[in-house]
Length: 558
Image (cartoon, rainbow, N blue to C red; front, top):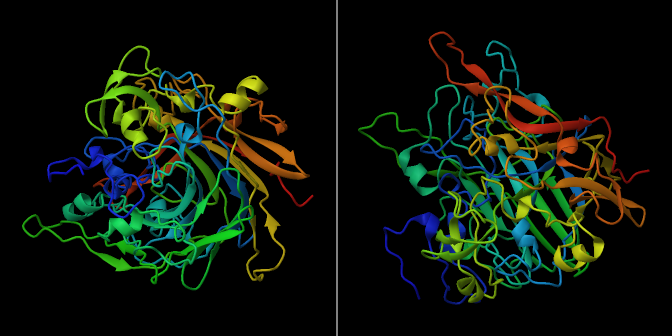
């Protein structure tokens, strides 16, 4: 077994075999590092507002998203989707880029989201958050307004993350999908600029995450608490206990609140199995306490408090958002893309690329980090393709090429590209209705891509603080950007992600990401108080392209 020294950087920890765990699993130390959000760009963390950086480094994740809106109470705190896991093509990937493209090359994770209460998370103006009410809506940029955004209750964001097989991710299984409840918070205070103590920053970062795989019995494998040191049980995959799924399986994904906390149930209709998880005290969910180092002579010790997470809002709309995320969503689906580039040789496993792959014909780039050799990955039964998995800031990897379904001739797509992931528009239970009552449809949708803030890091012409001038969609360097389309199957409408020409497509919303995601959009965020603005201020950041439709074009209640 490879041994680590205390000086080994967390980001480049090599993947190790773990005693008692199948050799298909990567090391739990490496998995834990994927959720140290301010020290990596591996694509598993919630995207931050774009004026927030860690030690001068931006932690960015490309997340094309589909948002669902309804003004009816209940639409903001529960949602039910039908979701079909995509198949990989019959032709495997090749190191020279000539083979097929598997799902793990296009997206590190696909997820369903929701805003939750967290009274220790930004903006930390108040430590009160009454769940499941639109009284929590504060998004006015005026510091003198009663709904000033700086007075918003603290929020966390749920990502119910599904991980594809074959590549480097939290499951790292050669054949199976798995799914985890991951809840992200942000330990800062908008009106003072204070951030959490150094001890917390070193242990969990400023964006701590509660993590728990869905299990067959609904009991967490280890406490989800970000400070829980037992990363072995937390991140290990235990067949029979950790809920796993096969490619192509048809699922029902059900997110709803309970007295104990937000609960997620995934029913695999194909395998006739069920996995679940509740963000409860019993499952070890906790909030990292916001306790800044206000006295340098007496540094604080990081601590957490058991906490049951509940939905923040009653509805889902343009104003039900977290104040610290780049995106504006509450009920949403998103895909984590832009985290795979071919690499032919590395200086060490998990380190830097030293021989550019087919995605970098002009030579190595600054983003060719977090890289692994194909020979090393083959030891774990994963696809033996050398690659880098950190952020693709120059948009030249697999996610930004015509390697998605629906981007070429049908015969070529069928052999070399994966099937599209498919999901229905969510449905929800009206407030006051029972669990078995009829579900209702969301009335409107919005397309949203957080491209400008990511392009801002590599394209000096793109300025998110000045109206988004110089930003483009697709971004500079990308040959293609995926888009959402609709299709009907057995009289049911579903969404799919890929190119504009997936067989069976009924609406491609203009046929390009430019037309679909629409114009660049400015969003207000709170800023610290100053002598001239003693009550705080605000800034408008143009970090998203957003297009809101006046209807939901993919309903299933017709």
